Image (cartoon, rainbow, N blue to C red; front, side, top):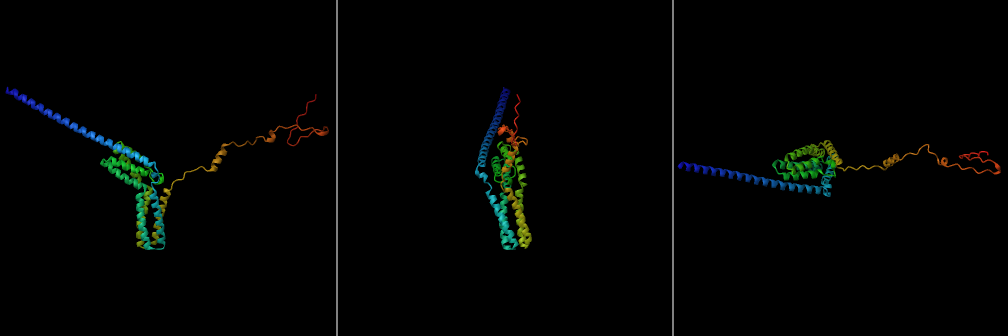
Amino acid sequence: MRRWITLGLAALLIAAASGCKKRAVEDEKAAQQSELRALTDAQTEQAKKLEQAHADYVAWRNTEAARSAEPEFKSDLAVAKRLTSQLSKQASKQQDKDAVSTIARLTGCLTALTAGAPASRIQQHLERAEMGLTSGDLEAAGAEILAAAGTAYNPSAPALVPDVLTQLEGAAEAVRGGDAAKAQELVSGVMDTTRADVTAGDLAGAHAIAVEAALSVERNAWPILIAQATQIAALLDGVEKRSAPEAKPEAPAAAEAETKSEAEPAPSATAPSPTETKQAEPAAPAKGGEEATPKSGETQPPAAAPR
């Protein structure tokens, strides 16, 4: 009897332990499902925010604000060219104090220009985007990618902007789809392109020459300073030419007239003249029974057959 009681108690204990384990497994599954639902809801909310940000970006891109996105850059470029011209004149007259002041102002202006170049601005936006992608903050990364795309969309001076808009739009699409790896790959490719940008490189080179120009003043090396001012001016002229809007080619009126004349058939060289096409009229009979002689250019009608 005692044996049966012991076996019954053991069975009850085993059943209780199994129930506890089953309940623990069910609780763990419920917790995992709850976390998964929370993560899914967070991703859905993040995707909605990115979609709205993209819609806002597209709306902004089609406004006049986007068409005049670079006025400060062009104004600063004009200021830098003016300061460079002043420096060249001061170097020719060996005005050391004025030259030192102008070099300081020119160096600051070139610093702002280099940072404000479209490629530099795109690069900085993508550095922030890359940090967001690696840390898992897709919302911040998507916002920075859209900001970089806004800079790349520049119809006022397209030659100043690297051709990276398509890649940036692809990266933004990858972020909206939750593909951080694809977005990071595209972002890295764009950064490689912006680092090799010609305009940003020219501005950085001009800035380096301006820094060296201060040493030329200290050494009273005026011919070298004049050469340095000439180099800076040449680099800035190149940037200015690239920033000028391209003129739309128009067909000249002479070319249109030539095309029209080629389309029309030329008159035939063997075409009959009006006098030849005009039928000959019979001459009036002469007085006194004389036969009328045909005039020049007319044809004598045939004589009547005898009866």
